[in-house]
Image (cartoon, rainbow, N blue to C red; front, top):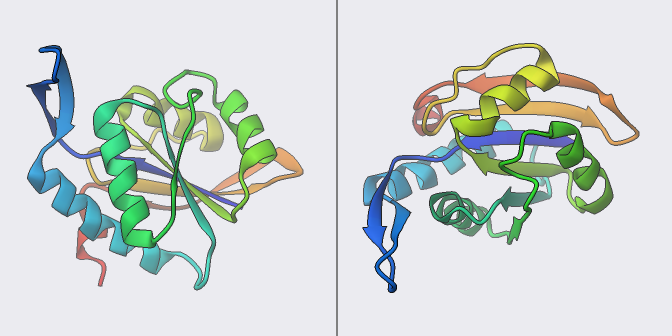
Length: 158
């Protein structure tokens, strides 16, 4: 099974219908997310079954929805995303992931920490960067870094 962490793009605060500030993806970030998704798709083995997961943070949700639309799959919302416990997330994946690849949309808040916990390497996640890990569903402690695309590298893959 593959696990891909994807760092969401830039956002700006806008008031929602109740006047509360909400983080919303910029138009440019939405376009770049679509391009980065093409790059991720090209790095995956052909005909890989994919799920896209995020939590309910607005700009992460928007990013996940763009990725899912580009790949023709659905988005799943998981509350454990955004919490510090990667082991809990791996447990949820082992129990609930139906596909061979799960793309988790996030930001620096947890992606840096999680990648370090999984691989022992602190990866410099910035917008539109991604890292892929290979995991064995039966032995979740057996995890290896497959690839890392920094900054806007995914935008250039054609």
